[in-house]
Image 1 (spheres, one colour):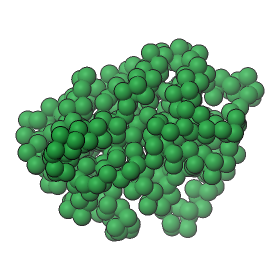
Image 2 (cartoon, rainbow, N blue to C red; image 1 turned 90 degrees about the vertical axis):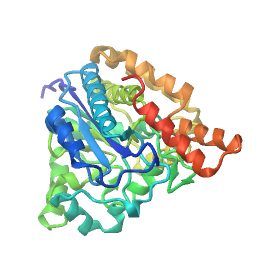
Image 3 (cartoon, rainbow, N blue to C red; image 1 turned 180 degrees about the vertical axis):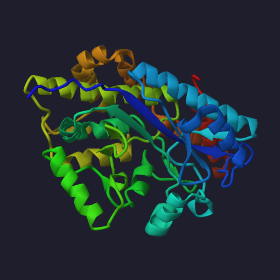
Length: 378
């Protein structure tokens, strides 16, 4: 049977937090006019999120990475300008440095209220944001096959995006504490390995038919077939504070899928490792970012992240050229050179403390850095 070339269209979703520039804290009940103005400017590309302090944007379906990237910049700049006009600021970070989850207010919509009632404190403490990347793959069986293979690279994508080193005013010792918070939810983590779309659908039918969940949108895996679109959705990443970093990671993701598809055309596959092994690398990325090596299970040894990234860039280069995003893929190296948002947050905090500042002053400096970096390059 002939294999049809996927469209590899791209859509990117980002979640932001609204902060008061005077207190640097989250605005737990922002004025409704912010969303009204955002919806007037952006239509359905901007939506409420679970908490009132959050705003979500989603690009239009981009025919390629550059088109999606341009739309993402426009969305972030527009929402940031609207927040500014209300005396508030936008930050793109997966946790707020010191906000308390118990003080946050849930968005007054039925679906969010039902979620809070169902999951209780597990979901009420989700003061976290992420970036999701959709890639169009029309063939459902191909979608499942590529999901099985691309899972190996999820730790590498997470390491490039870390932006959540603080929680409730404390250094967590992790570069992505968001992962620890989100893992408290059911049906999260790595997806099981399925042999076909039919097998996946039978499992979905089993849990929906029994009344455990309403639909597949409640499967919050690190990568999943979207329940709304014919896409494979990458969900493991923190949100990148600098938009250019998020674009680089989206380019890597679509290029990895392109590389895996071409291997399939040549009757080759990326080796599928058990989830327990990949989960070890996810933990290391969550804990250290790219400061410590990840395991190369083919070699059976730990390898510095910069070396692994070079290998990934080399292997995806033909696909990235075909997809028109080779420059963006190569720019991932600059993330390693200057650090992720988590690295810059920790440096801002340590700089204030080293100069004799208080913990509160150091945390405020982190928020100020996030405000500036969120609008960087727009």
